[in-house]
Length: 433
Image 1 (spheres, rainbow, N blue to C red):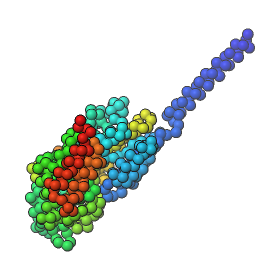
Image 2 (image 1 turned 90 degrees about the vertical axis):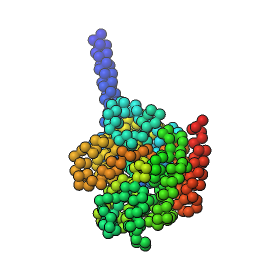
Image 3 (image 1 turned 135 degrees about the vertical axis):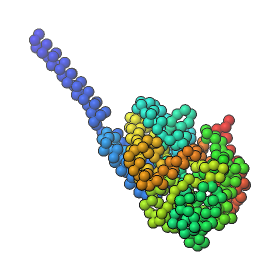
Image 4 (image 1 turned 180 degrees about the vertical axis):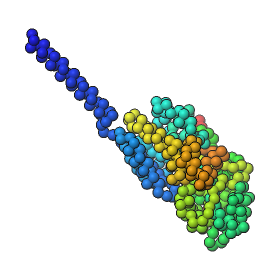
């Protein structure tokens, strides 16, 4: 009897030890086992060492979070990155998260490729954190009552101008042009045929973006709020495109034909143009490489000031485990906290996406020494959401082709925009039933 009792106790103890080991192994697997690995696709659309900055951001996060490893993968331009994402999704091998244009939102929703982040935000009690982003940046992040993406490297278009060239031309270097008439007038005074253009406004890369800026300044946006309609050929928008091309064709202060997005900042830095329209994402590049005094200003107004927002947001993909989605959210929240948003803005020139970033000691010190860094932020008061629709790629092609036809002299603005409007309406027809 004693032997039987002893054997029973031994069996019970053995089972208890096995259960304890099993429990310990489970905890190890969940908490201290193999780290969760996240593949992060990211694009580069501006000058400067952005790839190195991205890699450092991931390295810093990985050091602070040993159970998560974020692996950044440089995937080219925004357009190339979106193509690679679409290919990966079709091959059922999507990245875990990506930075893509904020305007890719409807396309990604239509592809059923991304998750709304509302549950992740709710679980993390991050509602207050979400409220801290500038409203203008959230316009391209939310639709259908959900938050689908988080602002990261965001921008507006600004006017860069060479203060030394202003002085030489007899212009006040502290008074940039504030309206369309002044822009043409100043550009004429700054123009030196054969050596320096008065102004350059890129017509490649993101021509729709530049066109939208002129449209907003002339009082009319290019689309509605739910991505189902566009207004390319309104009277106001035909006037806007006409003004843009007239800077080259009539005023002769800007190169005719295509002005390359990628090389235009170099033209400014090298003194080949006295003024430049470009993303604030190139601010740090220009700051570090220009050998002259330069200013940054709002783009000149016509009926009003105006700029579309621009740049990229974080997206989390649907075809990954909930564990990975939670880890991706942890990284996104970490990467967009106030201090890091401030540092990212300082390192790149992009606008810090959170209001609180400008209240950090880091940003206060920077903007006190370099006040140009506040211009794009202040311009957000006059900013609107960037052109974004369903079937976005096809709509972009329609309007970009129209702009190219006009700047290369193949068509007049009214004719080209009428064609683009008709094509876009056909593209968007399934969403207007």
